[in-house]
Image (spheres, protein in one colour):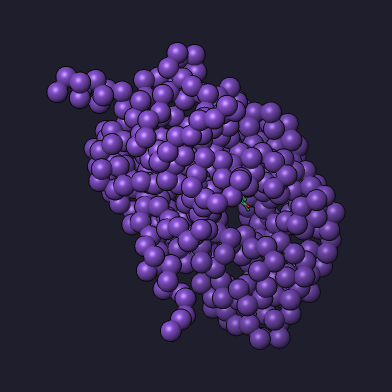
Length: 436
Ligand code: LLP
């Protein structure tokens, strides 16, 4: 009994639960989200937005985590809208209780069919190509596309995504602005946007930018520079209702990385806004749409140790998950902190029980490695490892590679645990295959 208690106190807890309680109930691999962390991040964002001297609207970029329970939680916490990037995300946002123009569909190269399908849902479309804008205009004018909003001759109100000629982010793959980016209409093509909107029954209600993902304190200058740029663009378009400055707010994946100071960032944006408003003559709503910031830190991917392999070069810790469940390390070389959640005394790296190990998954790929030369407290078979910051771009980027089933997802709120997605089965995978 006493031994047991010592063991218990060395375990990592999520909410009021020890990881072994969660694992006994739900198995591994398992995504666990702590709703209190999501609540804190939402409140932090909403408080920082109050620094802006105009009306604001906080959207959640749901691509980061599309579980409906998570999207619902955003609404409960006062997040006013959703940024969606596919018709499917639009429909998920609706299922979670968001409606109409509170859902912004930031399209990129989706084609007219999906443009029209989504407009029929009554959402706000944010268009990223002149070609898409022009074709939509033609279709509206020729009445090939008839929408409720435009039935009585009103113009269709849309937003356009601008590439402000500045990009920043964790790595090449997550930079979404600047000369190499496929996203948005370049900021020197504003006249063409205006021409199209004048030619067709289209009104540019808002402009949008999103320059990249996982911005930390080092990226502050570029972030502010891009916002100056979007304000310059806004000055060229009359009658704007809103400017959406995007998401991209980073989280500290690695110890020692300074996250973007939200208060400092929004104070700087407030200064730029005041200069803009002077010139523009009236207030414009400012919108933001972070994804990662609101959910990343809430999530851990819990995985069981399957085997330990030692040779003259290294010690490998094998797990029952892999790049199929969390692809960020393999895809972007991203760092995710890993701890032995079964032997969890401190997260201090100087702890003498720590050993240098490589942590890998069970997928048949050399890139299926979560971390190399990590100092982790002594690991034994069947221990539970916690891979940190799995709340964003974790499950939603998971696949069935090697025909493995995707994990379950659990939401913890203090002493309440809730299964929010059951573990996948082979039958689920077979459901779309046709064979006799
Ligand atoms: N808005 C737009 C238009 C976006 O394209 C994105 C992300 C966001 C908002 C939200 O960005 P966030 O606040 O989460 O940084 N899979 C990558 C991230 C790709 C994000 C693409 N766009 C990763 O795992 O780091």
